[in-house]
Length: 312
Ligand code: NAD
Ligand code: UDP
Image 1 (cartoon, rainbow, N blue to C red):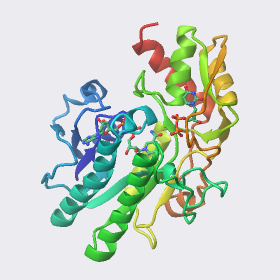
Image 2 (spheres, rainbow, N blue to C red; image 1 turned 120 degrees about the vertical axis):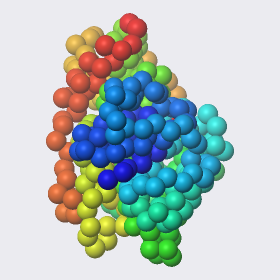
Image 3 (cartoon, rainbow, N blue to C red; image 1 turned 180 degrees about the vertical axis):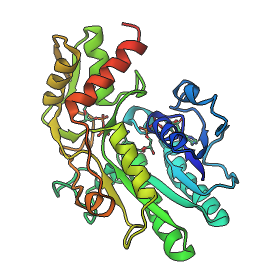
């Protein structure tokens, strides 16, 4: 197949491009390089099945493809809050442009949605039928609401125009090729531990997240894209149900890096969700998918990546 990956030069996108090329597909990596980097896909450029396109998904484009993975959107709070209006445009206009193209060429299209659609959840763990608890006017809203509208568009293009859609709600994912200054907690803690700096825990550190290693996530994305079943157009959670407080994560990073860590507490950002854990019953029943990489193992691989690539 010929497959388009928007946001293909980003953290998750680059792993997905690699995986799809490995399966023998032709892959077009589309990116505007806001948070993505050419170096993330440099090792793929000798493969004649791989193409790169510099393009912004807020503008229309026409490419003859069989499948589209729509990943284009900054994912770290630091990056998506840098230009919030652009973040909304990327999610909403990007979804409209990619769905319009999917409709014209008859491609199947998968949207990278997020656990952020649940906001600061009151239901725990989060199931796909939970409507969420989202602030529509706060600093995270550009991302959360943009992704919620994108889900609405995916469902409406499916119901109204018969577009073959998939929606995946991705929970916190980590691994090699996260940006050093990304601002997300796993990369921050690892870079700080390797440099002997204090680990910055926001608030008490008792808020929780569930961390999925990128290889497990990519497996889930590919399975969802290629599964046909009743209800397959409705959102599916993909994430690792192992739930950790940020204090626990700091200690896991200490173990994985073999460093003695010191902690600095900083203020908790506004609207920071207190807890997050995916219910993955649907993914396991529909796709036969469960994560296989425990946090300790995934952190070791991520530590090795940063130890090789950053200046210490
Ligand atoms: P990332 O920032 O590394 O990748 C996003 C990519 O999209 C980058 O390459 C960036 O340059 C590109 N991009 C941004 N705006 C664009 C635009 N207007 N046009 C074209 N390209 C654009 O982030 P990631 O962690 O790889 O996330 C990929 C997708 O998965 C995002 O849609 C994100 O919302 C979603 N997601 C990620 C996580 C996570 O924990 N990593 C969790 C939930 C959802
Ligand atoms: N966090 C932290 N220290 C950091 C970066 C983040 O304690 O240096 C916390 C943050 O407040 C949140 C959690 O870690 O509670 C996850 O943050 P991240 O930005 O990785 O993802 P998100 O909040 O989008 O789930």
